[in-house]
Amino acid sequence: MEAAAGEHLNSQHWRIQRGLFWLAVALGLLHIAALYATNQLLVYFTKPGTMLVILSVAALRSSRAQSRYSVPIVAGLVCSLVGDVFLMLPSDRFVPGLESFFIAHLVYIAAFRSGVAGLGPAWLPLPFLAYGLTAFWILLPGLGEMKLPVIAYLLVILTMAWQAAVRWNAKRDRNCLFALSGALLFVVSDSVLAFDRFHTRFYLAGGLIMSTYFAAQLLIALSVSGQDRSTQAELSTSK
Image (cartoon, rainbow, N blue to C red; front, side, top):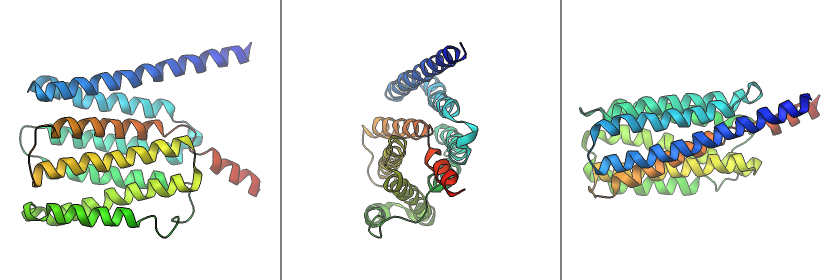
């Protein structure tokens, strides 16, 4: 009887998560449509609304046993939500938004480092380093006084992506693949944003930025489930 009740609760929990997943997708698409329709009221509703739903997905998938991973992920999503609000305000709040996302990446790094020993193969950071140097070289002429903030942000987001790769290399499970995919999409999203802001404006930028951004955050939220199982197994075998 108890087993049947547990299965029912798990099934109900899964249906709620699936509903939130599709709600996030729908709100994200509506946000992109609102951007191109220049409907600011809808933009103000759908951007934080999408992130709140994604935050709910991560919160539902977390557990006390996973707190070393799930708490930083939820904290990173909250910081990202604050950054989103800054970036969508009518006045230029780019720097506070950048600071909010900087903190988000720091806590994502803390999550990706949890339960992982070492830094992986020596070659693993090299693609991220090469990408960062290339991106900075392309953006440099248009950065002006933003050189140091952009350097700092490049360092932290590429470190975040590198640590997601280190985690995937160490564990090789589905959740780590979600985290790595999300981290790489985050780099793509912010690269397009930086190119559009500091180099060349282009019409498709808004759609590319937001589609890759929402996908990145949703994948990172989905990575919460089951992250600490291998860690628990290591601890139990060491006793």
